[in-house]
Length: 250
Image (tube, one colour):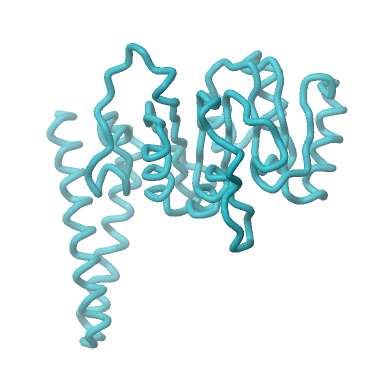
């Protein structure tokens, strides 16, 4: 089984654990690889849709792993017991936050009062959008962001965020996420100065500069001026990150 670059990074990011739950499992590849690589003793492949779950079941049977991987039709985490590692990828930041807060997706219902992340030790999260929402949520929910990795897959950039429940941490001394830039771009990524992250920052700078140039040429409305202000602030933030990257790299 050959994983995409993104899924490979997600599997690599999962720490050794007793049980890992892949929420929104799609074809079940992550759960299968976690068992085959001895990263998890058991796994739960969960999905809100029956179609992908049926495909995952077939793939799991084909690998002879039905005794170690349980498939569950579940709206997020609502129909499963909270494991010691939760993996969520391929979703927007807001949806990921709702799942982690045990809120039924696609509805205005309140979060489940009898569910908690307190027994979960690890989170491995790869939001497709609004990663700042995810970073803020996990830090407020009692987790420390221990690492972040950026991967480029089919021309797109993805971040993989590793979190650990603070109640399980005894030795690690980690700088906390505090600033707007920490949450928007990932403090751990800034600290690591990874080459793919640098490429992402440069691309974002170029995109925002082009947009600023177009607005300055063609639009003087109040809405456009407000947008310009926000874009210029983002450009300054990105330039600051790149400057720190370059200074420390050298």
